[in-house]
Length: 311
Ligand code: NDP
Image (tube, rainbow, N blue to C red; front, top):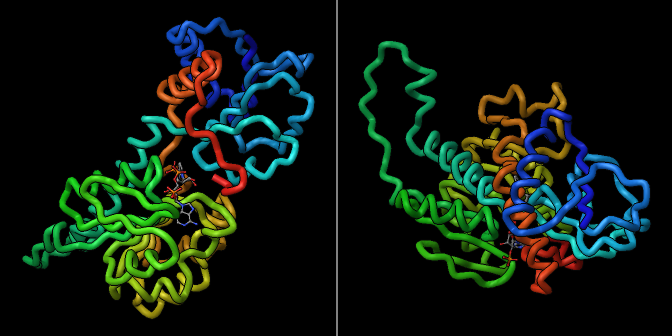
């Protein structure tokens, strides 16, 4: 079987993938020729795709049974009209773990008021203890692979987490709401707003002037989802008037974030360069190999993207 990897990252980034995939295919009992270029596209059985490269014409890959994305977010490929095969998004245990750590770390920074002590160590004794996590309300938009894991981690620390999704969910330890009417109730009175939604026409600007008025005054927004989930102008205004106390942003409408962008120098904005979490070669290879094995055994593949929904 031939698996073509269309990898757009550097040779250094690609390096760990080849041995990880080779081992994972072997472990699944799959006899795979792993290639990064092919003379005859029709001979390719599966395509592993990293979306940061140029838009691909998938038409010549007439024998390909599926395209497996190395990224969880598929907005750059989901609308590709030449892609007729099933598209599978990345759900990787390592990616999930990384996201849980990034979100938990940044929530705890603000919850504990760490900046006060780290940045303002000026000889003044300020004995003000932070409240307990159980006194903080978290609004978590997105209850998918990443959102539900993040929600459970925060709930385990006793934060009061309300999660919001398109369809109804039940996640242990969380209050779960859905649909348009659920959004307002989720955001109302929240101390933290965490965005783990995919980028679709429905989720663009989900945080806008109206919705940013709903959390408690001084709430913190964390966006490790996608930049366009936030109306940037509305966020800058909400930061200026104090409705939003801080925004910790990992993703942006333009990446890399241009040096002149006001977020860089804003005292109430923390910029991280799209590193909240990344696909980890070893665990991602296991996910890819397991899914190809399922397909070869005639079982349905996991995490197939609903092209109409866009994620
Ligand atoms: P999933 O597809 O598993 O989950 C998406 C969630 O969003 C689901 O709960 C879904 O609802 C919900 N959702 C989608 N559309 C709407 C809507 N219109 N209204 C309400 N809820 C909606 O995605 P993941 O959890 O795996 O990933 C989430 C996103 O995180 C990715 O799409 C990507 O953009 C981002 N990401 C960022 C990374 C980084 O390093 N910054 C790394 C990896 C991912 P339902 O369950 O009902 O379908």
